Length: 264
Length: 264
DNA sequence: GCGACTTTGTGCATTCGTTCACAAGTGGCT
DNA sequence: AGCCACTTGTGAACGAATGCACAAAGTCGC
Ligand SMILES: NC(=O)c1ccc[n+]([C@@H]2O[C@H](COP(=O)([O-])OP(=O)(O)OC[C@H]3O[C@@H](n4cnc5c(N)ncnc54)[C@H](O)[C@@H]3O)[C@@H](O)[C@H]2O)c1
Ligand SMILES: NC(=O)c1ccc[n+]([C@@H]2O[C@H](COP(=O)([O-])OP(=O)(O)OC[C@H]3O[C@@H](n4cnc5c(N)ncnc54)[C@H](O)[C@@H]3O)[C@@H](O)[C@H]2O)c1
Image (cartoon, rainbow over all chains, first blue to last red):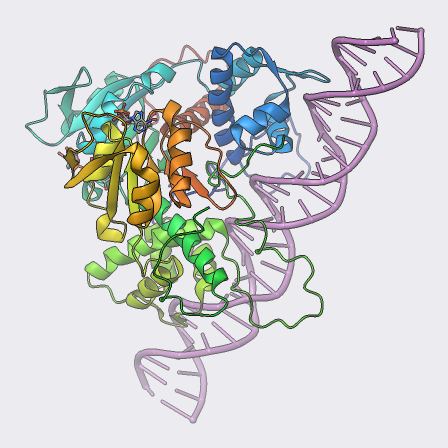
């Protein structure tokens, strides 16, 4: 039964077709090519642009006015060629022989990332994690005001968290529509995540960040980014194991109990 | 001054060389090829294996014994060809015409991910997020016991959180070495992250998960996975803006105020 | 035992992303 | 005015990851 697909942000992977239809165009043989179909920015580049933006904001605060791709690249932890190519996707805002003006880059990246308008966020599941998210000041200050909180627990409903009262999950569709929520954050136990996700979608939310360790099934027009701590830890574990293996010239993997890892 | 690189997990990107030296081997012309040098598993596949593992664990609990690549792929939200290729990196454990045995896959994936031994975790920065992490039961139960907590705040030092007393950050190197911490989780304010990271590295920690919105500079042998909420939100914002743009056949982007997005 | 059917495992083409390396601009200095 | 040092922007080569499609390998019913 071909089950719904969706689930954009695999983990550290960059899925291909965003919308299926419309983006790919298998048979464009003759036809008129009207305009260059808004050059696509590689998914991976978008993620890095967000990082550049933060680094640049920090630099702006330090009063830095101009910098070279080499400097920005070092600060962002990437290769300078990659950085220049990333920036080239959004236009040509540098000056050869000089570098980039910080404020110009900030403006342009914000424009591309759609940060010129703010995007209201709803957090669902006000437990340990949900509390942390609701109280976190870093979102509102960056154009992502937390405009709704939801939980199923009657003891929580009505209680203000981070200055905003918690609503009941039954009201998700109505309130999300009313408050024009554009991003939903799921921080419920795994078992509840799919149901919560469905309600968010019913409320018109097309962008979701999911902290629950489950794979959400969503319609095509909805984008899900997964944040999965357990997966992160397991990836690290994999690399640790790998490193240990490659040192295993003489076997005895289990004998190696004195866990000091290269002390430095 | 070539500044330190490092910073493994860009975001949604899959950096190439894990260890630089040792992994690639430019000139293996004649020489004896003893064994096939542990075929490399693509970085992106590793992340998915962790997801398959969780899905499989869930299935095992439901009493499912056998399943096909198609079924597992649907449950994990990926294409079945990709799933089979991912599994093929770790060996051939399926039966043609039948499928895979859940318990076999679970064992094999755990083996590959290095989950046969447990990896002690230290959390640094016991604030909102740190508390949530320290109290979270999902890590210990999956082979990642939280074995140390650190903070700079004197009021917190000594206080037990999730059953474990908080230690002072000055003791990071000593305690990490003593307790054989293999993974460090940074949940401090951004300004403190680099210093904390340095101490973890000094304590022999070679794997780090960083929640602070800063780019950490680490030596080559240390792997950093970044978890960056703000970046996730901005990526979603980008796609929202993009969708809005592509609908803009007749302009008036700002006029579209009745946020209902295809309600469904 | 045999043939029909199912599902794996993988070679291959393709698409996506990174890196190299250099021509083309820019500003400053003489 | 001309030259030089510097830095961008990008074409092109490379490499990684994805998806297709099918042969190989197995099961099941008879
Ligand atoms: N706490 C962490 O550090 C951490 C780390 C990684 C992943 N996670 C994941 O994040 C999620 C939340 O974790 P947590 O530690 O905050 O859990 P928690 O148990 O503290 O909080 C869960 C909250 O969700 C609410 N809830 C339960 N069912 C609900 C429903 N149907 N609709 C709405 N709300 C509902 C509960 O009332 C509770 O307030 C879990 O899926 C967990 O696996 C948490
Ligand atoms: N809370 C969230 O939902 C959230 C979301 C995304 C990112 N983050 C990031 O995670 C980090 C932690 O967020 P938070 O909300 O828990 O912040 P918080 O202010 O609640 O907690 C920070 C903790 O770090 C401690 N600390 C300060 N300096 C330290 C140092 N030098 N060494 C060790 N500990 C130190 C503080 O005492 C405090 O306990 C921040 O970098 C934040 O940007 C948080």
